[in-house]
Length: 138
Image 1 (tube, rainbow, N blue to C red):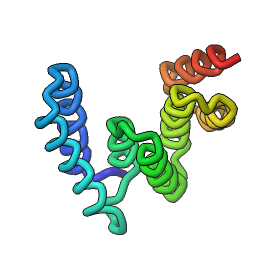
Image 2: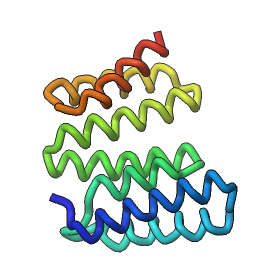
Image 3: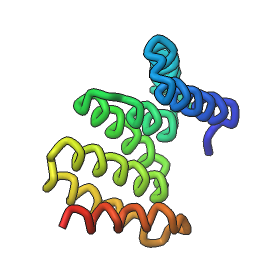
Image 4: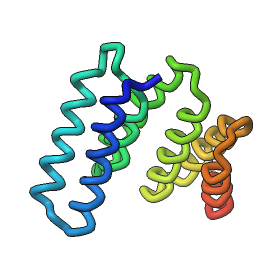
């Protein structure tokens, strides 16, 4: 269970990061990104550590290697929680990144993993997105 205050902070950062990106406001984006990153590291080893914050950070990270490191942290948190919904979501986002980076075989493996984690999920949109990604890589 994610701390509500932390969830609201992460959601707020994500919303504001999207707005800054759409406006191409690099200073605002950088400031928000740094604040989100600081929040993640602040909670990294504590009970408030949660995959949502790391996945969100990874989603807004431009450098592939850094994004992969953050997806890895998110994945570890999700494994600790035993939450297959998060594992599916993180695996999908990770696969999408790998595919965009031209790492197609690794992306296929990650997308297949996402599909397996999502099998018992009630998130039909995520399932559709995973299928679409897999079909696009065939």
